[in-house]
Length: 258
Ligand code: CAA
Image 1 (cartoon, protein in one colour):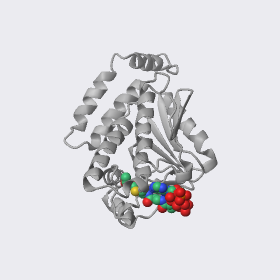
Image 2: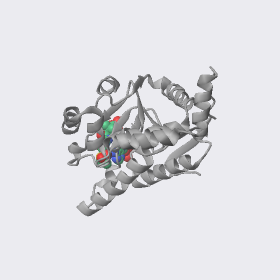
Image 3: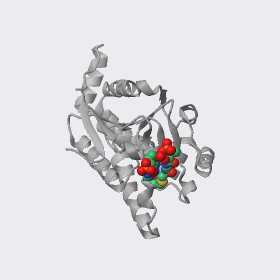
Image 4: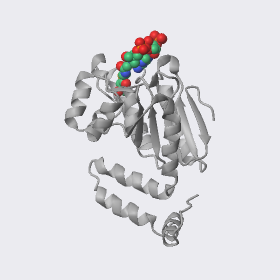
């Protein structure tokens, strides 16, 4: 399937979704967000795909935020509707995705762009990455989950500092905060991300799916994460991957989960 604002390609079990509006620094208009939702859902239903990478086209930006042009004239009601519908995409389609999603952050990841990255399972940032939630400079606050996910990831004090100043942080600070998992030179971003993906793909995709669900339960309001873990743990038993993983260990060989 082809998209107007995205490129989606699959190679060796890795689906790469590239947000493709470089002339607007990959700003997320509503069409692009809906396409992102669709592209991830397609990748989830495609048995050839085991892992997804999200990146931005061009040298300058992962995503420079929600498309300000579209936000500029919204009423309170429309603003709420927008936030509610995008929250669903970020929580259910991205964060809740049963296949791992890596954000490959090159250049600007601002506002809604950083919020996409925050909903992903792992973030790789290049040395030229600039990450921030500058919404208060527009008279807004982050509205695609940023106040919650950033706070959960880096703590309240740091999140409030980033949100109230609207400042951009680089890869070193992001790494230090635990916002980025890895820092890498720009020219090595693709090769590093694929290498990381392949490391994950050595493991059981079925187990990873249960791990994502269990870890996500950690900060879901009203959810007993330990209970979710018990359930997800138990679902791994008697699966093909569990038989292969334990047999391989006992037979002193590498498992083959394909
Ligand atoms: N929305 C719409 N268009 C955007 C955009 C955005 N978030 N970010 C960049 N663009 C557009 C610019 O308008 C410009 O388009 P034109 O050539 O047609 O004028 C093009 O992309 C290139 O941008 P600049 O000329 O501004 O590039 P620069 O290198 O001078 O500056 C920048 C780069 C500092 C990232 C600057 O573009 C910028 O500040 N962008 C806005 C960042 C921002 O505020 N993001 C938060 C958006 S609100 C949000 O995301 C709310 C939410 O939580 C949901």
